Image (cartoon, rainbow, N blue to C red; front, side):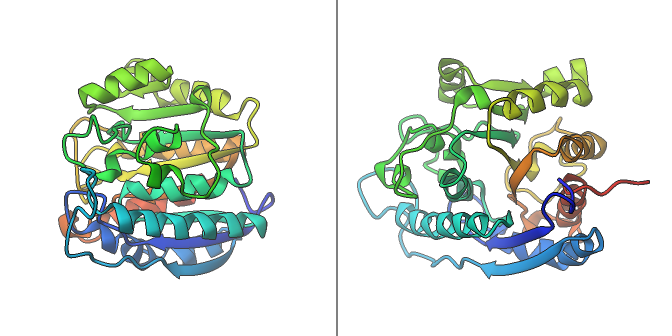
Length: 303
């Protein structure tokens, strides 16, 4: 993407940490803003409108019904609001850029995009599969479930966000950087036939070749492409401030190359960057890396 295609960007903060194990990701949107996201994007020629944050409440109890899903009520409320805001910004011909917060917010982001783009392609950068359900999740943490929800699997409350049962096409969904999957996730990914490029494939073939295949797959026959980037897709050496770090992840340059190739392809219509945990970070390093990746995704080049 570049300003000549759509110079209107709406920043939406979602400081939600109820879907995760660790506190700290609720400060992620503020950390990214502090790393001068808006100033950098304005320098690239974008017109920025910061919509502020969707503020979550802090329930006293994790479980408010008979499910084993933690904070289901509040996560549903926040994602419902996020869905409406994302849909509204797209209707205004603006590019929604969502800042998390934990990865459960992808339920609301993608639901909002699906209000306008029902043939949506998705590139999911993550160390994890995030495709658990209440039956397969070992923790009950909803940040490990957004992919399952967007394929129509999960709790009725989550499936009803957006009011329309439009689901993603597994053939237009690609995961990149995966290296930590639960047993139930492995079975479901194989059952749905989702393309997963683990770190093994990236090591073997290189990021450029992987991205060429992924871009072709998610853009062919779709009316938009959403990028969901969990910062734990990167190796903790480069992005230490994440809640669930996994060794052996994407390098700084591999991550930038992926974003640069997406920018050159001019296919991305929405994006979110999530799971920046400032409590575990070093001098806001991970937020600064996130801003650098966003800049590359939106067209910044060295020369």
